[in-house]
Image (cartoon, rainbow, N blue to C red; front, side):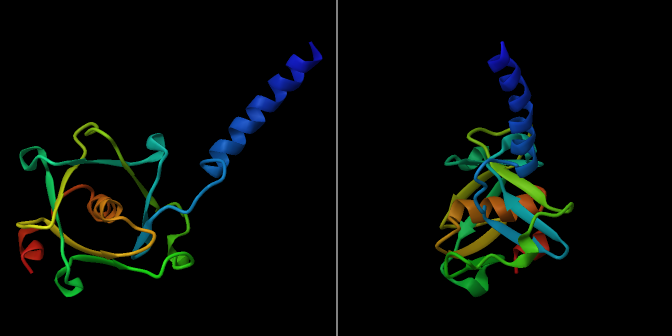
Length: 156
């Protein structure tokens, strides 16, 4: 009986610790800063405000993202030297927007078609040891609420 009481008192403490830290053994996730807001990928689906999915079928996509080899032509470029390149502005704060990559579209969330050919709503350039092209696409689409860029911005 004493073991059950100890277990019953420890379980809520462990649950509180997990929710307080977001996850045990928290690992730095890809993050970008946009003004006073940071946008970060999370593996915790229930915490994310935007759920993006990817498709290989252009007809199912709601947002098209092109991978470009020219950083100057990109709407969003990620270039880093690996570990230790995270900026202070990506620390979690009340304005942090959490994004998750879902296996299937969730509640009308954006569905991204990622390719090396256009036309595209966003163009990204990624040379990174910590960001994948898919993560960079998820961050830029999630940062804009899952919406394509306005036509005039996308055509620049």
